[in-house]
Image 1 (spheres, rainbow, N blue to C red):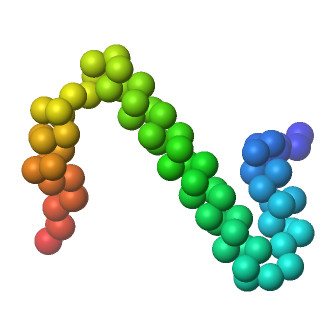
Image 2 (tube, rainbow, N blue to C red):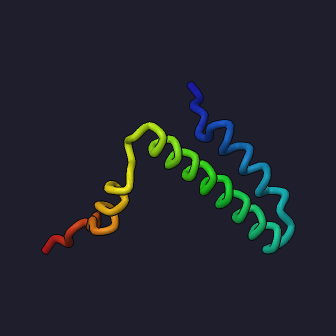
Length: 73
């Protein structure tokens, strides 16, 4: 029984990375991926705002929230 380790998106990225010839190309790919995920995050935030799940009060609450995991001793 064989199991696929990578999903189609991961395989596509591996193929893209295999063809990189320089650090500059790697840097450009990283930038493109960052832009992609930033755009997706913006779209999701806009959607939450339009649905009323987020508002100005939510942003103010998050500004003062502390999400760090306390250190165990």
